[in-house]
Length: 230
Image 1 (tube, rainbow, N blue to C red):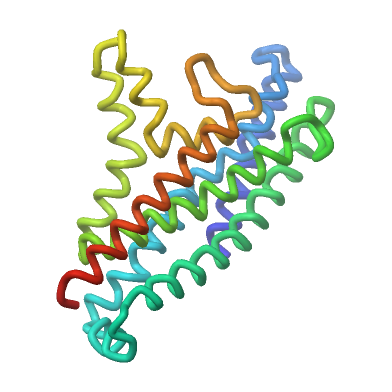
Image 2: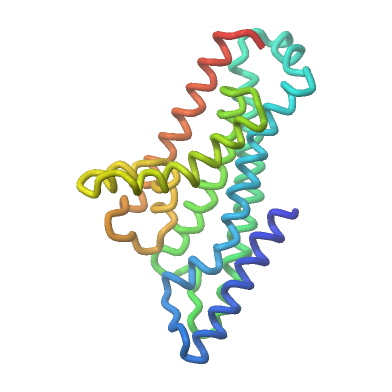
């Protein structure tokens, strides 16, 4: 519930402030910025769902309950698959409600500059944002399986989403941007763009690339978990 309130509340607040600035002539508001503003609170949800994915796994390790869990099913991969399905379901529902509500209320705050669900690209952005939230949760879960440490997995998640793209900017300009745009966070954010930025992946391509990163993380987690002691 807190994630929904934060996502919706921040989106509405940013949209309302931008609408006030636009009406005074200080900052003209376009369609692209209007959508981004109403979904600005989703960045809080990125963190929340990613950490939730980590804790769903590392919580069992910290409490010692993972041993009995694996003893009940020595194959282990069904346990991973069940946790993936539960987390994906919860985040898709919760994230979807948050994103849709944030968009509706945010656009209401924008007044005459508002977009509707029928406008070109809007539904795609909302779906991509929801999928990105679920994907980050699953990447967090995969990191939990791989590292088996809450602090380590959360740090790795933050590094992957926030630090790695920044470090990528230090690469040579001749090929650095070509590397950065294929990173999971950049690909996922490209999928959420109403209009792709210069040098970004196309939205559909970005979504596919991001989902491939999610799948890679989960496969790595499944392989690592099946080959080592609980």
